[in-house]
Image (cartoon, rainbow, N blue to C red; front, side, top):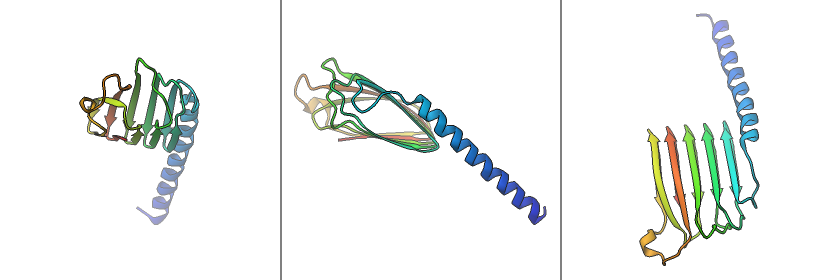
Length: 149
């Protein structure tokens, strides 16, 4: 293999990576729905990152997708619907950080393979009856999700 063919191969690989990144950003932008005040939202980060701070009153549902990227989701300024709320988080070779306020009961259901989920929140048994409940479902594939207060 000559030096010239190695350089061509490297340039092609770099161009393909840049193209995949641009397409991923465009797809993620089209998949993202809702704003910080919406009672339901969908976030997507593909080959990139996304920060989101919800101020919803009441928050009913949300979903986040991180594919070779990351999502930082801050729910500390949101108020949950009295019936509770659901959050679906999917990571594929990416990660998600979910921050909730103290006093929320957080129930995490983990699915997927070869990924990790870490929940560092107050045990729901230690909270008063009637504490707002956030049901989090995670699907992790070579990625990770962390839920903290």
